[in-house]
Image (cartoon, rainbow, N blue to C red; front, side, top):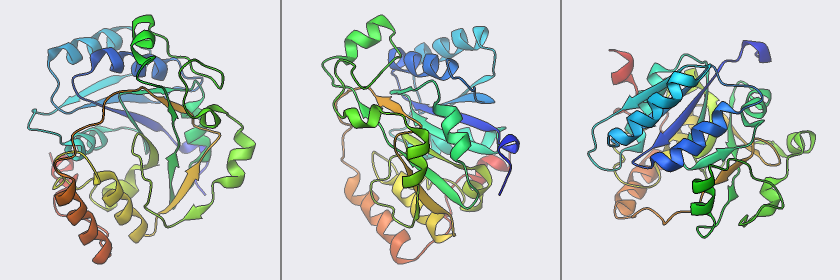
Length: 269
């Protein structure tokens, strides 16, 4: 088992044209009890407002903040994540969405729970759409069991020792949510990262996990630890879901461990 003190965590935050929400996510990342070695904003083609926000935080932060931007050619989360992971300096990747608020011990928990041969699937607290604008206006990054607008309160309870009892290894790819996930960077590179054949919302994270599991990297579900709060917003369009389901089924049926259109193109640069 790799010693905890040899694990360096890069936090990757995905975003697209939501600078007010991203601002809260970055604030929560910079307020960690144990900070990541860097924050990488994986930007799927946002306008200059996002770049200016990142620059403001970079100028004041005690850790590096990297802005990795790609042209806006539609929803391309897979490519955005690959570009960010390719430049990451840490040997462990913690992946969240830009609409997530992180508990102050979020990074500490992910690093403490990291075990070679596994990846972590975290849970999330939901904040209702009704109370999200109020939180954004107040720049409020705190959330708790008794907070206003919390919809699934049990996910706001942090009991680290209890969490370890339930973080058992398994081979399931159901219920995958890349909004709170972590894995060793080398494991990601070995399977060629996220599959960029996925265009539009959905299933690129499930297919990524299918290949991880097929390559021998097991899943560990984490609750009561590594807490994060998902800000309320309308759902993304799902026009591409049928095609994305087809690509996912190919990975399952073929027991694939890699993909052709992945992270390697950025590593070669």
